[in-house]
Length: 319
Image (tube, rainbow, N blue to C red):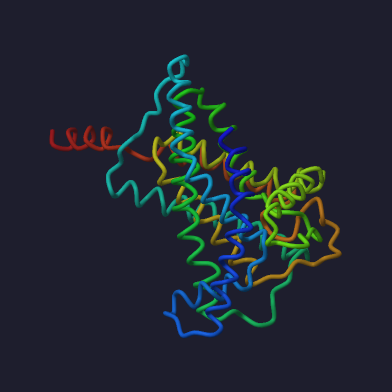
């Protein structure tokens, strides 16, 4: 219900957000503005309505979180599920989880990309990107996206879900929401005639839902991101904290963005479109990489000591 309400609220907000963004873009073309506002105005000018819907959806999801919390409190009264147990880790373990998660996820995904380049599925771009482009397209997303999305999906949503459902159901449910929220955009070629119309958001939602009827999209792109969500949720439940999930998420984003910045897909390669998609985040081959990543994570997560185990080892050392 929370997801449905967020989708509908975003559909209502989107035309007004679109008009506000274009108004800001028009002002930015005629007046001197602070650098940050000017950059925002240029982005608003370039963005299409689906980009505005994406931002409206995130805003709607956050605004409706208090209602989700009230709903879950009511469900807890009739549920027999155990509490969501959080663990506290020493700073050294927190740093270790983030670094290992980042290197593990990013390394395996990049390694898969290099293998695909070896078999001719990708080729390197002739001109290497400048440092500024690497920072804006790789470094900043690899920091910002994991922090925001892990807090929202694994911190708040999964944390609330665990209070009224078993861990398996909570992980699957929150991962479905995670994947759906990332693909709430229309398929290629879909356009809205008048983005300023009050019902333009609902027209966009209709085109988005039609995108989910495409078997290729559902079996490759959606399935891969659902698998990513399941691994991140499982890591959150196993470790009792967000740190390892943040590291994994950062590694995936950095490898995906960085590889796409340096490589281009070979359109007529035999592995396309089912084996690999337009990037490292879609296709059956990336799904196999996720399976390998999950297997390695299973053993890695056994090594992370929490504060209790760290104190226990400290007591033995004193003796």
